Length: 354
Image (tube, rainbow, N blue to C red; front, side, top):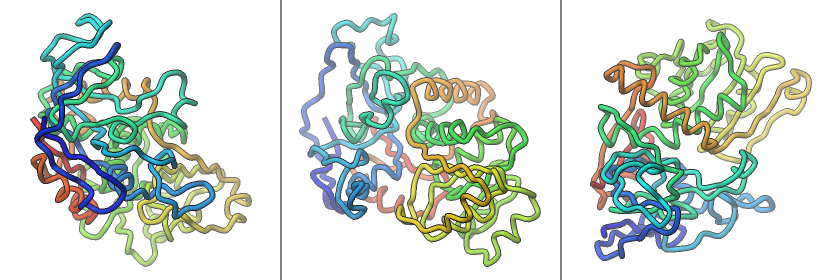
Protein backbone atom coordinates (compact mmCIF):
# COMPACT_ATOMS: atom_id res chain seq x y z
CA UNK A 1 0.00 0.00 0.00
CA UNK A 2 0.94 3.68 -0.17
CA UNK A 3 1.94 5.32 3.10
CA UNK A 4 3.85 8.23 4.58
CA UNK A 5 6.40 6.84 7.04
CA UNK A 6 7.75 9.00 9.85
CA UNK A 7 11.26 7.62 10.33
CA UNK A 8 12.38 9.63 13.36
CA UNK A 9 12.09 12.91 15.23
CA UNK A 10 12.92 15.97 13.17
CA UNK A 11 11.72 18.10 10.28
CA UNK A 12 9.67 17.25 7.19
CA UNK A 13 12.64 15.35 5.80
CA UNK A 14 11.78 12.59 8.28
CA UNK A 15 8.61 11.83 6.28
CA UNK A 16 9.13 9.26 3.53
CA UNK A 17 6.44 8.48 0.97
CA UNK A 18 6.41 4.81 -0.01
CA UNK A 19 4.24 2.68 -2.29
CA UNK A 20 5.49 -0.73 -1.16
CA UNK A 21 4.39 -0.82 2.49
CA UNK A 22 2.69 -4.14 3.38
CA UNK A 23 -1.07 -3.98 3.86
CA UNK A 24 -2.03 -4.41 7.54
CA UNK A 25 -4.23 -7.32 8.56
CA UNK A 26 -7.02 -7.15 11.15
CA UNK A 27 -6.21 -8.98 14.36
CA UNK A 28 -8.75 -10.39 16.84
CA UNK A 29 -11.38 -7.81 17.68
CA UNK A 30 -10.11 -5.42 14.99
CA UNK A 31 -11.27 -4.10 11.64
CA UNK A 32 -9.35 -2.87 8.63
CA UNK A 33 -10.38 0.42 7.04
CA UNK A 34 -9.70 1.62 3.52
CA UNK A 35 -8.80 5.22 4.21
CA UNK A 36 -10.62 7.97 2.30
CA UNK A 37 -9.34 11.10 4.06
CA UNK A 38 -7.28 12.05 7.10
CA UNK A 39 -6.97 15.52 8.65
CA UNK A 40 -3.89 17.17 10.15
CA UNK A 41 -3.53 18.19 13.78
CA UNK A 42 -0.93 20.07 15.78
CA UNK A 43 -0.15 16.75 17.45
CA UNK A 44 1.23 15.52 14.11
CA UNK A 45 3.74 18.37 14.04
CA UNK A 46 4.74 18.15 17.68
CA UNK A 47 5.05 14.37 17.50
CA UNK A 48 7.25 14.57 14.41
CA UNK A 49 9.42 17.18 16.13
CA UNK A 50 9.37 15.37 19.50
CA UNK A 51 8.28 18.56 21.29
CA UNK A 52 6.48 17.14 24.32
CA UNK A 53 9.41 17.23 26.71
CA UNK A 54 9.54 15.35 29.99
CA UNK A 55 8.49 16.28 33.52
CA UNK A 56 12.13 16.98 34.40
CA UNK A 57 13.28 18.47 31.09
CA UNK A 58 10.89 20.61 29.02
CA UNK A 59 13.34 20.44 26.09
CA UNK A 60 13.53 16.62 25.98
CA UNK A 61 12.63 14.99 22.65
CA UNK A 62 9.64 12.70 23.24
CA UNK A 63 6.23 11.68 21.96
CA UNK A 64 2.97 13.04 23.41
CA UNK A 65 3.08 10.57 26.33
CA UNK A 66 6.50 12.07 27.12
CA UNK A 67 8.09 8.74 26.27
CA UNK A 68 10.25 7.53 23.36
CA UNK A 69 8.37 6.74 20.13
CA UNK A 70 8.83 3.66 17.97
CA UNK A 71 9.74 4.29 14.32
CA UNK A 72 8.83 4.03 11.54
CA UNK A 73 5.33 5.27 12.33
CA UNK A 74 2.42 6.22 10.10
CA UNK A 75 0.81 9.37 11.50
CA UNK A 76 -2.75 10.62 11.05
CA UNK A 77 -5.44 10.40 13.75
CA UNK A 78 -8.52 11.88 12.04
CA UNK A 79 -9.72 9.12 9.75
CA UNK A 80 -12.84 8.63 7.66
CA UNK A 81 -12.93 5.54 5.48
CA UNK A 82 -14.73 2.34 4.53
CA UNK A 83 -14.82 -0.99 6.33
CA UNK A 84 -12.62 -3.34 4.36
CA UNK A 85 -11.94 -6.38 6.55
CA UNK A 86 -13.29 -7.85 9.79
CA UNK A 87 -10.86 -9.57 12.14
CA UNK A 88 -11.56 -12.74 14.13
CA UNK A 89 -14.46 -12.29 16.52
CA UNK A 90 -15.90 -9.24 14.73
CA UNK A 91 -19.25 -9.44 12.96
CA UNK A 92 -21.18 -7.07 10.73
CA UNK A 93 -23.70 -6.76 13.57
CA UNK A 94 -21.08 -5.23 15.86
CA UNK A 95 -18.95 -3.27 13.37
CA UNK A 96 -21.20 -2.61 10.38
CA UNK A 97 -21.38 -3.96 6.85
CA UNK A 98 -18.27 -4.24 4.72
CA UNK A 99 -18.01 -1.19 2.52
CA UNK A 100 -19.87 1.09 4.94
CA UNK A 101 -18.42 4.51 5.71
CA UNK A 102 -17.05 5.00 9.21
CA UNK A 103 -15.51 7.68 11.38
CA UNK A 104 -12.69 6.56 13.70
CA UNK A 105 -12.35 7.43 17.38
CA UNK A 106 -8.57 7.96 17.64
CA UNK A 107 -8.29 7.23 21.37
CA UNK A 108 -7.13 3.65 21.97
CA UNK A 109 -7.84 2.79 25.59
CA UNK A 110 -10.05 0.60 27.77
CA UNK A 111 -11.65 1.54 31.05
CA UNK A 112 -12.83 4.86 32.45
CA UNK A 113 -11.57 8.36 31.70
CA UNK A 114 -8.57 7.99 34.02
CA UNK A 115 -7.05 5.77 31.31
CA UNK A 116 -6.79 8.85 29.07
CA UNK A 117 -3.62 9.88 30.89
CA UNK A 118 -1.85 6.86 29.38
CA UNK A 119 -3.93 6.08 26.31
CA UNK A 120 -2.50 5.15 22.95
CA UNK A 121 -3.30 7.64 20.20
CA UNK A 122 -3.85 6.76 16.57
CA UNK A 123 -0.88 7.89 14.52
CA UNK A 124 1.38 7.99 17.56
CA UNK A 125 1.45 4.67 19.44
CA UNK A 126 -0.34 2.89 16.58
CA UNK A 127 -0.17 3.46 12.83
CA UNK A 128 -2.71 5.98 11.59
CA UNK A 129 -4.41 7.21 8.47
CA UNK A 130 -1.73 8.68 6.20
CA UNK A 131 -1.88 5.41 4.29
CA UNK A 132 -4.25 3.41 2.11
CA UNK A 133 -5.27 1.12 5.00
CA UNK A 134 -5.17 0.95 8.78
CA UNK A 135 -6.50 -1.34 11.46
CA UNK A 136 -8.19 -0.33 14.71
CA UNK A 137 -10.25 -2.02 17.44
CA UNK A 138 -13.79 -2.58 16.19
CA UNK A 139 -15.19 -0.52 19.06
CA UNK A 140 -13.42 2.58 17.73
CA UNK A 141 -15.39 2.77 14.48
CA UNK A 142 -18.67 4.67 14.16
CA UNK A 143 -20.81 4.18 11.04
CA UNK A 144 -21.62 7.58 9.58
CA UNK A 145 -24.42 8.25 7.11
CA UNK A 146 -24.03 11.87 6.09
CA UNK A 147 -24.15 14.08 2.98
CA UNK A 148 -20.82 15.59 4.08
CA UNK A 149 -17.81 14.69 1.96
CA UNK A 150 -14.97 12.49 3.17
CA UNK A 151 -12.59 15.46 3.73
CA UNK A 152 -15.35 17.33 5.58
CA UNK A 153 -15.98 14.39 7.91
CA UNK A 154 -12.24 13.95 8.47
CA UNK A 155 -12.05 17.53 9.76
CA UNK A 156 -13.99 16.67 12.92
CA UNK A 157 -12.47 13.94 15.16
CA UNK A 158 -9.52 15.25 17.17
CA UNK A 159 -10.21 18.99 17.04
CA UNK A 160 -13.90 18.80 17.88
CA UNK A 161 -13.52 16.02 20.44
CA UNK A 162 -10.73 17.96 22.16
CA UNK A 163 -12.89 21.10 22.17
CA UNK A 164 -15.89 19.21 23.53
CA UNK A 165 -13.83 17.82 26.39
CA UNK A 166 -12.40 21.25 27.21
CA UNK A 167 -15.91 22.65 27.58
CA UNK A 168 -16.97 19.65 29.67
CA UNK A 169 -13.91 19.84 31.90
CA UNK A 170 -14.49 23.56 32.48
CA UNK A 171 -18.21 22.91 33.09
CA UNK A 172 -19.29 25.59 30.63
CA UNK A 173 -23.02 26.25 30.88
CA UNK A 174 -25.74 28.17 29.11
CA UNK A 175 -25.25 31.93 29.17
CA UNK A 176 -21.56 31.95 30.12
CA UNK A 177 -18.98 33.90 28.13
CA UNK A 178 -16.00 31.88 26.89
CA UNK A 179 -12.80 33.51 25.59
CA UNK A 180 -11.21 31.21 23.00
CA UNK A 181 -7.58 31.57 21.95
CA UNK A 182 -6.25 30.25 18.64
CA UNK A 183 -9.83 30.52 17.42
CA UNK A 184 -8.95 30.19 13.74
CA UNK A 185 -7.35 26.77 14.18
CA UNK A 186 -9.01 23.37 14.35
CA UNK A 187 -9.67 23.22 18.10
CA UNK A 188 -10.39 26.94 18.37
CA UNK A 189 -12.95 27.01 15.56
CA UNK A 190 -14.55 23.89 17.04
CA UNK A 191 -14.74 25.64 20.43
CA UNK A 192 -16.64 28.55 18.87
CA UNK A 193 -19.28 26.22 17.46
CA UNK A 194 -19.57 23.84 20.40
CA UNK A 195 -19.77 26.67 22.94
CA UNK A 196 -22.63 28.15 20.94
CA UNK A 197 -24.35 24.74 20.77
CA UNK A 198 -24.62 24.65 24.57
CA UNK A 199 -25.87 28.24 24.78
CA UNK A 200 -22.62 29.89 25.83
CA UNK A 201 -21.32 33.07 24.24
CA UNK A 202 -17.99 32.50 22.43
CA UNK A 203 -15.46 35.32 22.14
CA UNK A 204 -12.60 34.66 19.72
CA UNK A 205 -8.95 35.71 19.93
CA UNK A 206 -7.52 35.33 16.42
CA UNK A 207 -4.59 36.25 14.22
CA UNK A 208 -4.56 39.24 11.87
CA UNK A 209 -7.23 39.18 9.17
CA UNK A 210 -9.24 36.33 10.70
CA UNK A 211 -11.76 38.23 12.85
CA UNK A 212 -14.50 38.32 10.23
CA UNK A 213 -14.36 34.56 9.67
CA UNK A 214 -14.64 33.97 13.43
CA UNK A 215 -17.75 36.14 13.76
CA UNK A 216 -19.33 34.49 10.73
CA UNK A 217 -18.77 31.16 12.49
CA UNK A 218 -20.68 32.33 15.56
CA UNK A 219 -18.33 34.32 17.79
CA UNK A 220 -20.09 37.15 19.61
CA UNK A 221 -16.89 39.16 19.27
CA UNK A 222 -13.55 38.53 17.56
CA UNK A 223 -10.40 40.33 18.70
CA UNK A 224 -7.09 40.18 16.86
CA UNK A 225 -4.36 38.98 19.20
CA UNK A 226 -2.04 41.85 18.23
CA UNK A 227 -4.53 44.37 19.64
CA UNK A 228 -2.64 46.56 22.13
CA UNK A 229 -5.47 46.67 24.70
CA UNK A 230 -7.11 43.23 24.66
CA UNK A 231 -8.73 43.82 28.04
CA UNK A 232 -10.27 47.04 26.73
CA UNK A 233 -11.55 45.31 23.61
CA UNK A 234 -13.17 42.61 25.74
CA UNK A 235 -14.93 45.11 27.99
CA UNK A 236 -17.81 45.28 25.52
CA UNK A 237 -18.81 41.67 26.22
CA UNK A 238 -18.74 41.88 30.01
CA UNK A 239 -17.13 39.42 32.43
CA UNK A 240 -15.22 36.45 30.99
CA UNK A 241 -16.40 33.31 32.79
CA UNK A 242 -14.04 30.84 31.11
CA UNK A 243 -10.84 31.03 29.10
CA UNK A 244 -10.37 28.08 26.72
CA UNK A 245 -6.71 28.22 25.70
CA UNK A 246 -4.66 26.23 23.21
CA UNK A 247 -1.95 28.87 22.73
CA UNK A 248 -0.16 29.47 26.04
CA UNK A 249 3.12 31.33 25.58
CA UNK A 250 3.75 34.88 26.71
CA UNK A 251 0.06 35.73 26.81
CA UNK A 252 -0.79 33.28 29.59
CA UNK A 253 -0.69 35.83 32.41
CA UNK A 254 -2.86 38.28 30.47
CA UNK A 255 -5.52 35.60 30.01
CA UNK A 256 -5.74 35.05 33.76
CA UNK A 257 -6.04 38.80 34.22
CA UNK A 258 -9.18 39.05 32.07
CA UNK A 259 -11.09 36.10 33.52
CA UNK A 260 -13.56 37.10 36.26
CA UNK A 261 -13.07 36.22 39.95
CA UNK A 262 -14.03 32.59 40.58
CA UNK A 263 -13.74 31.98 36.83
CA UNK A 264 -12.08 29.04 35.12
CA UNK A 265 -9.15 28.59 32.78
CA UNK A 266 -8.87 25.38 30.73
CA UNK A 267 -5.96 24.44 28.48
CA UNK A 268 -5.39 21.70 25.93
CA UNK A 269 -2.25 22.99 24.24
CA UNK A 270 0.57 25.50 24.12
CA UNK A 271 1.35 26.18 20.47
CA UNK A 272 2.97 29.55 21.29
CA UNK A 273 5.07 28.02 24.07
CA UNK A 274 4.31 25.35 26.70
CA UNK A 275 6.42 26.89 29.49
CA UNK A 276 4.62 29.95 30.87
CA UNK A 277 4.88 32.52 33.66
CA UNK A 278 2.16 34.04 35.80
CA UNK A 279 1.63 35.87 39.04
CA UNK A 280 0.26 33.32 41.49
CA UNK A 281 -1.38 36.15 43.40
CA UNK A 282 -3.73 36.51 40.45
CA UNK A 283 -4.69 32.85 40.80
CA UNK A 284 -5.35 32.81 44.52
CA UNK A 285 -6.71 36.32 45.05
CA UNK A 286 -9.23 35.85 42.24
CA UNK A 287 -9.85 32.24 43.40
CA UNK A 288 -9.47 30.92 39.88
CA UNK A 289 -9.78 27.29 38.81
CA UNK A 290 -7.08 26.07 36.41
CA UNK A 291 -8.00 22.94 34.44
CA UNK A 292 -5.93 20.69 32.21
CA UNK A 293 -7.66 18.85 29.40
CA UNK A 294 -6.54 16.59 26.60
CA UNK A 295 -8.17 13.92 24.47
CA UNK A 296 -11.85 13.01 24.71
CA UNK A 297 -13.40 9.89 26.18
CA UNK A 298 -15.16 7.29 24.03
CA UNK A 299 -18.47 8.60 25.38
CA UNK A 300 -17.63 12.16 24.35
CA UNK A 301 -16.60 10.99 20.90
CA UNK A 302 -19.94 9.20 20.52
CA UNK A 303 -21.66 12.46 21.54
CA UNK A 304 -19.68 14.29 18.86
CA UNK A 305 -20.72 11.75 16.21
CA UNK A 306 -24.37 12.45 17.02
CA UNK A 307 -23.76 16.20 16.60
CA UNK A 308 -22.10 15.54 13.22
CA UNK A 309 -25.03 13.42 12.10
CA UNK A 310 -27.42 16.19 13.10
CA UNK A 311 -25.37 18.73 11.14
CA UNK A 312 -25.53 16.51 8.07
CA UNK A 313 -29.31 16.10 8.35
CA UNK A 314 -29.66 19.87 8.20
CA UNK A 315 -27.91 19.96 4.81
CA UNK A 316 -24.83 21.79 6.08
CA UNK A 317 -26.80 24.40 7.99
CA UNK A 318 -26.73 22.55 11.28
CA UNK A 319 -24.98 23.69 14.43
CA UNK A 320 -21.60 22.26 13.41
CA UNK A 321 -19.89 23.24 10.17
CA UNK A 322 -16.92 21.43 8.62
CA UNK A 323 -14.17 23.95 7.97
CA UNK A 324 -11.85 22.47 5.35
CA UNK A 325 -9.35 25.10 4.26
CA UNK A 326 -7.42 22.92 1.79
CA UNK A 327 -7.13 19.30 0.63
CA UNK A 328 -3.80 17.71 -0.38
CA UNK A 329 -2.92 14.38 -2.02
CA UNK A 330 -1.12 11.82 0.14
CA UNK A 331 2.35 12.33 -1.47
CA UNK A 332 2.22 16.00 -0.42
CA UNK A 333 1.94 15.45 3.34
CA UNK A 334 5.21 17.32 4.02
CA UNK A 335 3.88 20.39 2.19
CA UNK A 336 0.61 20.14 4.10
CA UNK A 337 2.47 20.02 7.41
CA UNK A 338 4.55 23.05 6.41
CA UNK A 339 1.37 24.95 5.54
CA UNK A 340 -0.14 23.86 8.85
CA UNK A 341 2.83 25.25 10.76
CA UNK A 342 2.56 28.57 8.88
CA UNK A 343 -0.98 29.11 10.28
CA UNK A 344 -2.25 31.12 7.32
CA UNK A 345 -5.57 29.26 7.12
CA UNK A 346 -8.88 29.07 9.01
CA UNK A 347 -10.14 25.63 10.00
CA UNK A 348 -8.54 22.33 8.98
CA UNK A 349 -6.12 20.92 6.40
CA UNK A 350 -6.96 17.45 5.08
CA UNK A 351 -5.13 14.72 3.16
CA UNK A 352 -7.25 12.95 0.52
CA UNK A 353 -6.09 9.33 0.51
CA UNK A 354 -8.71 7.25 -1.28
